[in-house]
Length: 296
Image (cartoon, rainbow, N blue to C red; front, side, top):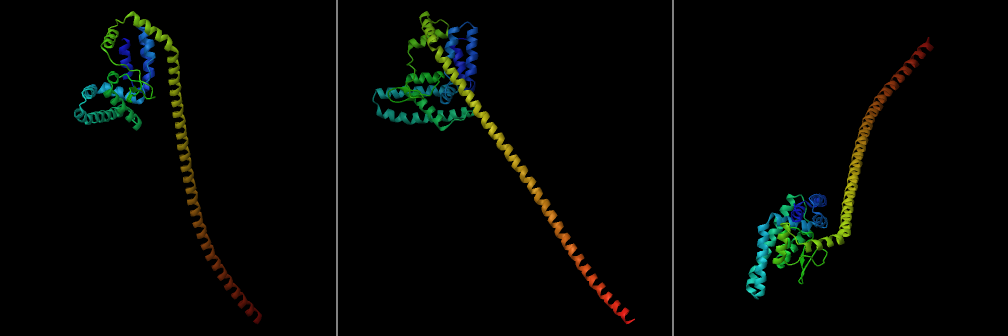
């Protein structure tokens, strides 16, 4: 595996596995004796969600991307010829093709388990439009190795931060150099330049990797905290349910006890009435017996 193949495999990996895949591929290149390629691979940036989605579309729908770039060629020809009628004919095709690609991208993202926000969807549309308008942006999109979404702003192409994009027009000479790299026949002058770039970018690469690790750690910590809060809420809800059930049982027992007490009061009242009646009868009999005794 050479650097070009490793870079292609890296940007084909899922966004969540980008860093781990980059480290593994860089280690493999180093083990194969390509120290320069290993360092260059480590310098590749993790794509944003919008860039990852554009790369996914480029891999999965290359024919549609070719149609988009061909339509861009037609736009440039019509513009150069000042052919207003032709431009009016091409404009609906431009919107229709970008709509089609955006809709397909949503399906691909869903298949990969990635939610696409309105902001990401808009940035994808801007990237596709930049690919249509700008030849260099088009080749960059077709290559499928973007680290940032693109946007055409009239004077050129910028990335998501608003900074000028580092993409450059694809010339015959550049194509030849790319073919030479893929054939492992790079020139010594380029190798020296890459080596110098390696030394200059080592600190920046380490800083970026540290920032990416810290971001992942923060996300993991936030996720763990949210999980802990969820567990606490569930436990509190279960405890509240248990308390409600216990109080409901106590209320039921109290109602049963009240009913028994009321029944006992009623029974005792009846017994009291009977006792009073018996007492009055006994008193009456006692008085009559005393009268008989006195007569005797």
